[in-house]
Length: 389
Image 1: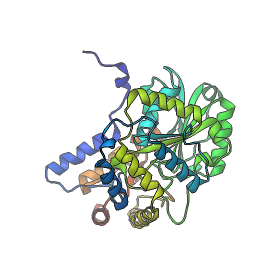
Image 2 (image 1 turned 120 degrees about the horizontal axis):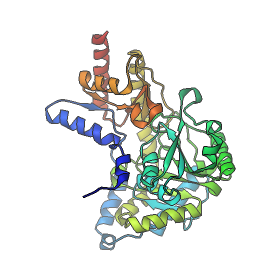
Image 3 (image 1 turned 180 degrees about the vertical axis):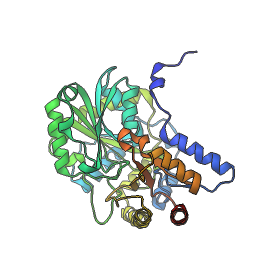
Image 4 (image 1 turned 90 degrees about the vertical axis):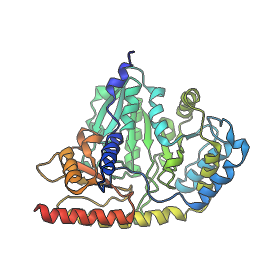
């Protein structure tokens, strides 16, 4: 038996290895507090769950769904974008429901990338952005995201030859893992750059609804010209704590949406209809759940950032996302310090290097951890710091 060579280019998925290590420690009786995975611990709102249950009892929802999703779902997505961002979308041509945004993020590369083609990808970044390119046979060209530039890419630093030969550019704001945000002026620059170099833009906007202190992150689609060059991926996972239900959406350029639909129609059988009806309820129903979730996350953010800075782990409070991107102390690599925390405190975080070369020197904490675990984790960090000095 001989496996495909493309598998040799894929590193183990970052969170699989971390989860396995945590599971091993827990199996041996260790109490591990995990700040590693960005999976909301808060439950899906009850009114959404009730709709899933009701729809699950309807036998018409037991059969194969359509790849394009229910017309009512596409309409609900378009209406949500109009209400939230003031963006008008044609629900027939500019909206496509996804089995979670992750599958669309990886599949879109198959629409643009032939073997050897180049795609511009941020570094550090959510790993599937580059892995989709690799699976399609392409070559990621990494655009550094650095603190001195507020973790925004410098388009002027991309070599002209690379830019002219690239097919696709990924952006992601609010950003995972750094927590950085971008404003409309940045997206205008990105569109200008894309038009100069005949690039398609894909924007991962999964965290626009996880924001604090009345900040409202914009959508890439709000900018004039966005539909001419790009599309945006969004998700109900973070907004409504629905990670386990696997539902998201792609919106934007009609030709790009159609290309992704053609790929999906050959690779999957659509989203279970009971979950589609729940998504309709989520987007059209009461929206106070999002503000309530964000208030809890903000309290957690403030507590964790305070103790991290007190113990010498430099961290800024993000305006959006539920991630804290913290600098490791001098003398450590991100992997060394991650291991030290796990070995000496039984606290799990993610090493920045796992998100790319430019992530070295940082670790990522996720705030998706129950409050009692957060408090225990903070106590452990403080105790360990005093003991370690």
